[in-house]
Image 1 (tube, rainbow, N blue to C red):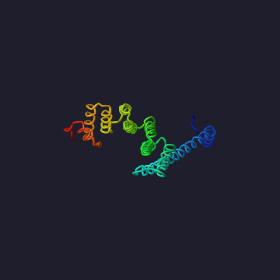
Image 2 (cartoon, rainbow, N blue to C red; image 1 turned 90 degrees about the vertical axis):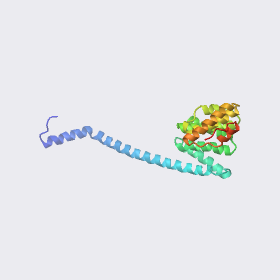
Image 3 (cartoon, rainbow, N blue to C red; image 1 turned 120 degrees about the vertical axis):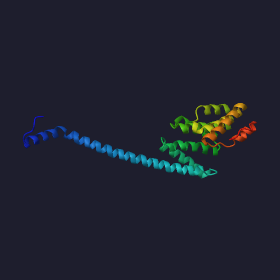
Length: 219
């Protein structure tokens, strides 16, 4: 651009620039302000949603920790599970609520509903640990219902190493139900070894080994 030599030329140049660019500049500023305000509003909304989900989950956890759950308490627990799932379906709390849903269903004697909840969690969650935990619990439920083959399939679909001792213990129970005593003994020993190495709690495994004639297997 040629050098501007007078104030009048500078003023005329500024007017021309403003005429050509002023509207787009204002629009850009408005868009930027709206974006910032919108982002802050979204963050605030997300924080409020997370807080609400946490509160509902704590209420559910308190109910589910009772020795027995029936009547109004059972109905309230089921209501909270539905609310968390419907309103906060993409959160960790929704996945945890589904685990509690299975527990509540078992307490209510509805094993089909418990299996359905665990299967839904396995299908929908993106959290590998919870997927594996649901598989572990589903395998135990299937074994309790007398379907050892299905239980073994659920277990072998994938349970994380963080649950390795519990996985081996459950595998031993399944193999024993299938009449595979040697394999069951090996699984129980693996459970004991993993419990010692990782601190994962397993209960009654030594007794199971003793009953299979493995008196020398100790922690």
